Amino acid sequence: MKILRTAAAILSIALVFPPVLAGQWPPHPVPGVPRTPDGQVDLNAPVPRTPAGKPDLSGVWAFLRQTPRINLGVGGAGGTPLPDGTVPNVLGQFWDIAFGMKEPLPFQPWAAELRRKRMADNNQDNPDAHCLPIGFMQLHTHPEPRKIVHTSSLIVIVYEANFGLRQIFLDGRTLPANDQQPWWYGYSIGRWDGDTLVVETSGLRDDGWLDVVGSPFTDAAKVTERYRRPTFGKLEIDITIDDPKAYTKPWSIRVNQLLAVDQEMLEFVCLENEKDVPHLVGK
Image: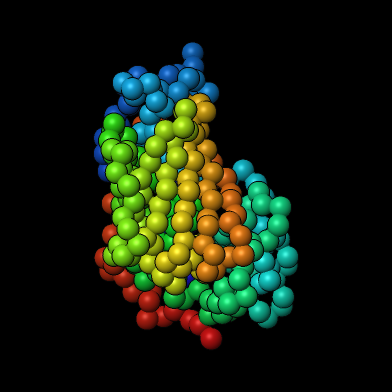
């Protein structure tokens, strides 16, 4: 978990001292950014739009936590305190997938047991801890930022975390058939529903890590994301996970992200001089 804690620490520094880390590039204000009379970015200004009239999702975005941190109970994700000696409380303090949810995640029994085991092992097998692509929900809530490049036929999302990359095709193609080669991030297609971008993803790898505490997903998972940009500086993403192998019913959460204006991402190559993995501790 040292890698994960280091990533969180790096982001905290970046948010407090952005000019220091952003110094990799000379300061370069983005033209056309709406600003208040005192020169501050007007995050509540109208949404920029593409030539087709749709909200332009482009920009560098940072995860915005708007709810209290929740301890993840071993039996669910609804805020139950962790039993003494079962799982370190730092996991609940570092992460919650169920913020905003009114009930625990609806695990199948085997999935709940697998998450218990992963947490009891200090989450040492999390792909993120081994510099591999991170879990699907970690993509949305990882403390490191992500950059969206929005074109008429394709959206590319570049994640600073482990330098991840997703492609969302807007060109009318369909998802691959059932025999597709499974991918870490799956296959994603998007369509517009008014001002909401609806993204469907399938073809994910089996037995994956949905989040940092080991909530599983399988090759049966279908993920639907609904992207809305209500103001210049805010992105709302509603995510629905439908994985009948791992969960008894579909479940959804909302993630909010904040525009990081005049900022660029760092080059983060996780394996460069990586020395943590041999020292990971688990039961």
